[in-house]
Image (cartoon, rainbow, N blue to C red; front, side, top):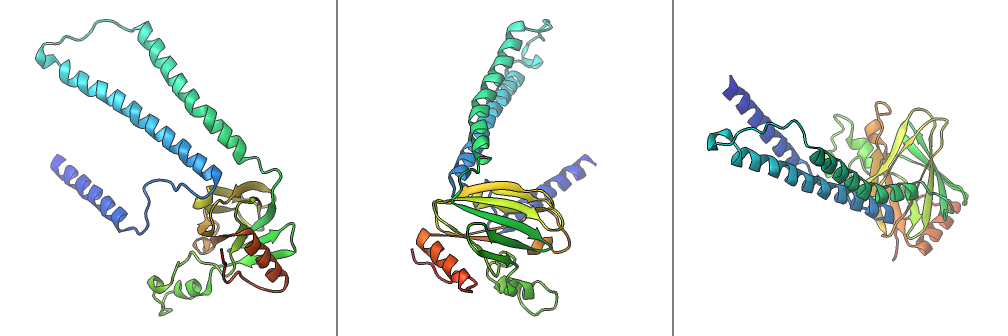
Length: 273
C-alpha cells in the first residue's frame, strides 16, 4: 500500500512538472514591471525571498547536522535541561531585527503606493459585464474597451477559427487605454454592476472595481510599449473575456492620440518614437 501511495505521489509530481513545462510564457517569479513602484515591489519581494532562503538554510542546516552528528547510535545522550533563557532571548531578538529590516522599506513603499496626489493624467475606470469604460477627466475623451473581434469569433465552439491562429487570443481589445510615458497616471476605479478587478502585472496594479466605491491606483510608466492584463475578480459567465490593454507612448504621441479621439478617431494606429 505504501509503495502504491509513493508511486501515485511521484506520478502526480511528474504531472505537475509536465503541466508547468507545457504552459507557454509561464514565469516562476513575479515580473519586474515598467514602473518605479513595480521595481520597488520586486526588490522587496526578492529581499524577503532571500531572507527566507537564508533562514531555511540555517534552520535546516542545524537540524540536519544535529540529526547526523548527535544521534544516539554514535553514543550521544539526550540533554536533560528544560530550557535556555539565553537561547530564548536570542531567537526572539534576531527575528524582531529581521522583521524590522523588512518592514521599514515595505512600509515606505506601501505609503507611496497609496499616494496618488498631483497626477498628470486622471482616468475613471468603470467595470461592466463584460468590458471596461475609460474616461479621461482632463480631456473630452471616453470610450468602452471590449474583447477584440478576432478573439470573440474564435472563442465560440464550432466557429471554425483556430484560437492558436489568433494573435494575443483573449488578451486583445478593440480600444486600448493609452497613457504617456513618464507621467503620473491616476486611476479611479469603480463598477457599474458587480465586483471586477483591474489587473496589469507589468504595472504592478491589481485593484478591485466595486459598485458605489471609488478605489485609487497610480503608476508612472518608464517604458513605451503594449502591456496586457485581465479582470482578476470572478464577475460572471464572461469573466475570462474582458482583457485590459495599456499602450504607453511618448508625450507627443499621446497628445496626437487625444486630438484624434476628439476628432472622432478610435485608436492610435502607429506610434513613432
